[in-house]
Picture 1 (cartoon, rainbow, N blue to C red):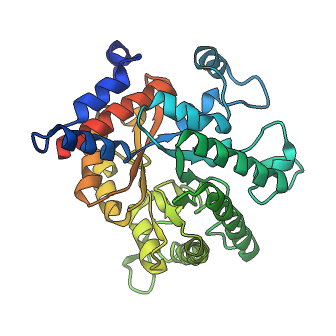
Picture 2: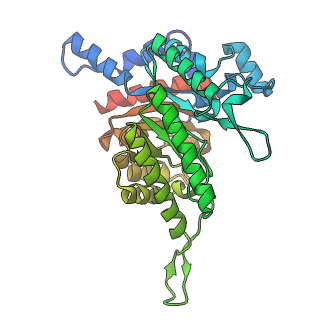
Picture 3: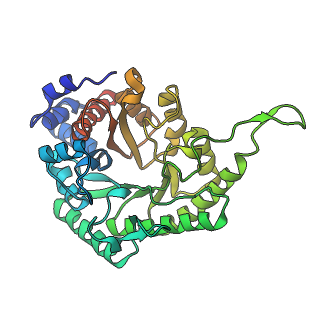
Length: 361
């Protein structure tokens, strides 16, 4: 269904979260205690997501005009503030999905790996200052009672590269993030950025001279390299009790069959899918693609709204698909783009996912 900003804002404000929770509670029995427990259990299935709220995070510069306006309205925060922001904005939610690009103190370059051109790269969890920052974040989590469930990680690159040295370097970055995730007590880490598993335009099947039938020989080598990378990362993550996940996040991972192939071939209890409701190449995939990968997901998914799909967006239906597949993990509130800002959109998703829980009860 289409999302109308005016309709949403009529119900927004201080009473929104309360209304979401009340409307989502359905009586399994006539016992009030049983209802309260059901509501608590459902709240444990929700995770705040820092990605859609990135516009109010502190940056090195002034930021764009939209970001400046949002900071005037909501205030400026850093990741160290996000646990309290979660507690205040999503009452009862105690899980977080943290976006890797928002890690660190933007005023301290020593926390970031240098780029080949000498500029500042991504946050480095293995640096001395980066490790101290992770300890600070963990202390904030402990003080608020809000934990890091998942890290949406864009740092590792070249995981399917034909350059062996680049592929190995990508895996080593992933290992540093798994060590950092262990400091925070995270359960899972996504390991593919939009380009980590190759370009968005993947090789296609063409007729071959040997028999004239279409065959795709070019896609096999990058798949094999991706499988090798995920095996190494899953072994490392498994030793630390942290799942390594693949999101439908462009490159090889834009095709849900490729996600299943990689996970099947890796064949490791610490390698699984973390589906995103909207990261698809065409609209038939919104539900059919999700059904393909849903059985391979156990820990975390992105409950996303993205206006690129117009009337085809249906957060409740996607949530029910995951539940029907037996998914028992968390749903992160990842509002991508639409008529609402990131905070309003996240609250909208909170309401929709909780409603879907009630519908599936």
